[in-house]
Length: 518
Image (cartoon, rainbow, N blue to C red; front, top):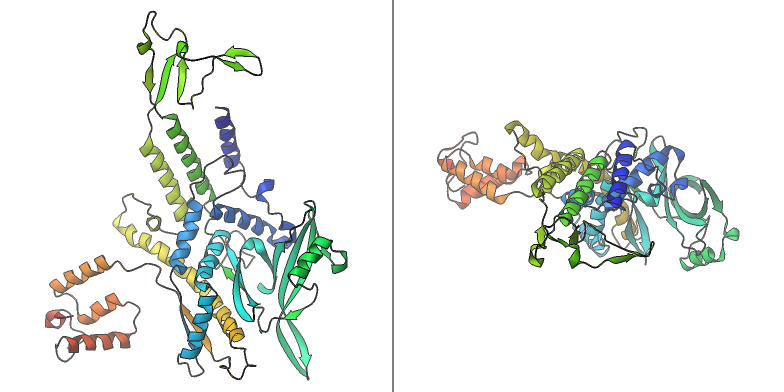
């Protein structure tokens, strides 16, 4: 019971305190790199990212992990990026450029962009933001994805003007922490009397000593770090052109605003408002598993059926009893005098309130999902009875959240893929390939967040058809809700001709013979 008492005190401490990363294990060691006005946001972002990963130090050292936080982030990302994006490149006159579209799609396929897109959304959902940058590998552009624990941004007028990507340099000296920082920003220069601008990358090494950060020049670096830089062909404090007008780095925000840090242009995690509920789920999950262990069938017997064990600390023979073992002893006097051996064995099993525990866990899981902004039914939760007035709002909750995320991501993706295509085709320097111009656009479209339930759709159409209550035009709109009016009319005309119905009747007419064959 000692372990349980420690855990109970821990629960009380967690619920009475404020889990904002005050524990050393919950403070990222890269925190001194982060600008002062972003430090609190960074600590919160780090904490929610741990919940998204499924292991929070100091919490899951004592509690079992149900994985609810990870499921919220992963399922939401699948609804957005689980299917490949629709990507088109339009030419100067606005029509689709088949060659550029094909070239871009093939390059993205080779770069495994579909998987990276899922990672982008997952990381943003878990920590509030993610970042993407374009690198040149073997002469071709390649996209890399970074979590909030791998970069910080310098802002000017609430807009990013410098991206700083960092990674810890491995050393044998654990006392000293060195970070390689890749900074990307736009610089200006004069060329033949013209002022030009473009993205540049500069590398530096920063040493962290307590809460202090110190830039280290190449001459003062330890030999191990110098060797690391040489192996990776990195030159410090030397700016190199990226080959783009932009920085080649892009911020993906998970939300349009941050309720806790409204002064920052940094997103808010899906989990930022529900960590206490995630904690409650894991707490009751731990209780559930412990109680399940305690209610296993056990054997109770008299002391004559057991051997005494020597206590090593006192060097005496003692009886002991452990309720978590599969068997334990009944003490003297619990059996009647003269009882036989077969009377001295009893099978014991405690009651296991399975339904109560599962209801409690599901309740807190529902609250966590709802606080994240999604419909619990999306996660196979929410079996409670729902009023008729709640049905549509519940069904739309997940769709609204996902559509909002897609709008945030779309413009960033299109700019990123335009830059990617620019580097892929050699920009304006390669005359043998298509020349990239400002008029050329990369247009993306995310897949529908919710798949159409074909059984429900078929049933609806059959019922309406039997009742002669729906025109052909309405049926087409039901099946293809995103079609433009011209596409709908063309499909209606095709259906009439194919089924030999004749000329298209009055489009305002509802029901009647026009529904035959539709």
